[in-house]
Image: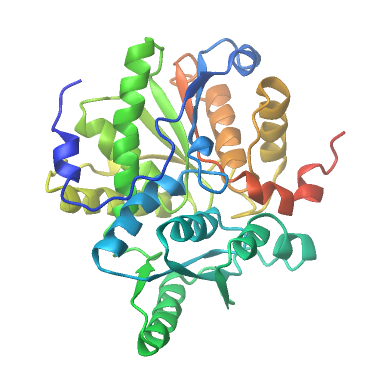
Length: 346
């Protein structure tokens, strides 16, 4: 495939290389047969290493690279109670000798003991991160502002804090990790001569979705990148992805000028909302586990798999195409949802 030298475009940005790369691409023959025979594959980004892995490891290589370049000694991040992002940040900060402050937001309204003590929360504590809490779940600007208040207090005490932002309007450094992943995927698929024409991925912060789309288009690939909404409805999510794409133009100095027509987002399985299970997600998690031994989480990959299976069943333009499911990890959260995941299932 033709395109710019991505390595050269990315070289201007500091990066710490901690992820276990490349992650494998595996066929899913049993699930393929259950879906009518279209070739299905899975990109195992749950295998990036570092405290149970996941897609956030690739993203954090660039944020933490920037933090070290700025001589930071403390990193701060905000996320949901069962955030994979904050768990990976705490682990990678430990590897780099940085202190870590985590802010947990109430995005689901759940207050049961299992949700608030197991899964990623247990790992956050095991990793030794300092925990803070923010009571609102749909206030990204407020969550960032509160994080900066914590950073200001730490700075006054002599620390050198670095804030990993959540809200739009910040350079999408983390998306650079998935620009790199796009090149990795193209190389793997071409080398193995696999029949891939489209990718499905969970679309939340949009860093993974936008990075993959930007990277593939920069390489000259026309593969569809379908983002399955896990937090907000499709129109709002499309705006989010487009903002990240524009930010990648700025970060790389290479303008692709991708627009709304380039962004495919789908919200058919989003309800009842972020971090809340539905029957499609339960069914998809069960199918992946029982057909392929593939463990998904209820917040991101379970919904993404449900959205992919729904699209393959209902959209004739997609149903016969070779498909790559991007497994972004997140399995620790499964243990905080045990009763819900197994509800009404044997």
